[in-house]
Image 1 (cartoon, rainbow, N blue to C red):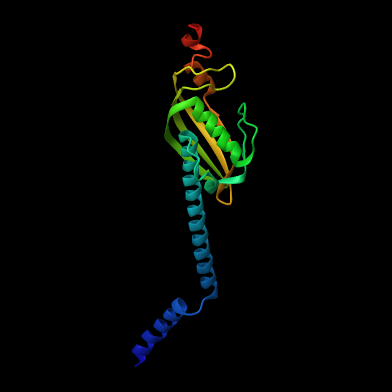
Image 2: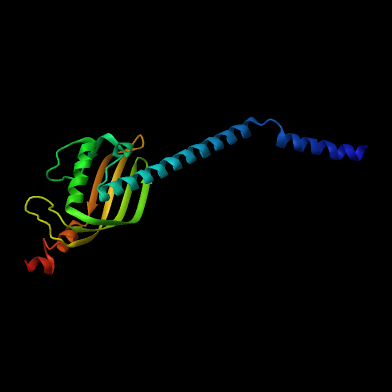
Length: 188
């Protein structure tokens, strides 16, 4: 009996320390579960923003704006000056898309990077198209192709795009269109 008591007492003590009430352990586990849940929710939000950014770009280059209010907020603002566009909100974006797809057709994009952090998504991609329409006063269609890299930054509120910045290789595009520099411009 003495031997069984020597084995039983330490075994009970060990089991009690591992499985008994331990408020510190319980608190740590609850905090860990909360962090995991928050991380999972944040990951889902980031993925949703990336998908919305892809839809935004698809609308821009296709010219098809059906469902635009699902992904763009009423208070939308683009920080890209576009001659002839003075509207605001969603209508500003619709007008910009119409002007862009009126000036460039056969638009194709190749996604290179899509990065999301905080309330922003940055899209870096290659854009190919043909300048088949006027880009504004004094800039008639050249019917020449372009192939440039572009970066768009989209800011989100409540799951919708509310602000936009866009940057591209403008000088390269103008050279490709024969509007400045290069051999093409000199041949005019």
